[in-house]
Image (cartoon, rainbow, N blue to C red):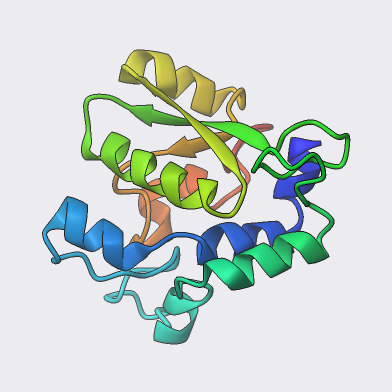
Amino acid sequence: ALREAFRDIQVRIALSHAINREELSQIVYHGLLEPGGYSFGPSNAFYSREDHMKYTAYAPEKARVLLDNAGYRDADGDGYRELKDGSRFEFTVDAVAPSIGVDICELVAEQWREIGIKADLNASLRDIIWPRRTNGTFDIHYWTGAAGQTDPLVRLAEWAIMGPTLPF
């Protein structure tokens, strides 16, 4: 049921619109982060500012509408939406600890909670997190520094089909 939800573009767009990137910038990066989405970095010849900013506006009400339209509602009134099988819309976010990624994931989990999605943080050592990433036994995986690559060949496993669980 979770895989079905994650494969729904409306869900992915909703999760993106529910992230307050400006708040992340202020709290974690002292206002120095330039908010954006996942795309090529600005120095890449294929960089597009429009693509870089797509779905990045903080719009929690729009996120709620997208989730409602996709059929993910809070049917039992507990404050969390349900997946199509009736279970709570809940997942685990893996992040390497200690790292700034844990702080980011904690803030994003709070922001997703505001739209009725429960994200649990699994902050663990790299030796525990990395195998979960490469063998595909994770719900969401946060890895610091993965976005905005100038050249996709730098991190080929994130862009090209390299195996049954790659790209991640």
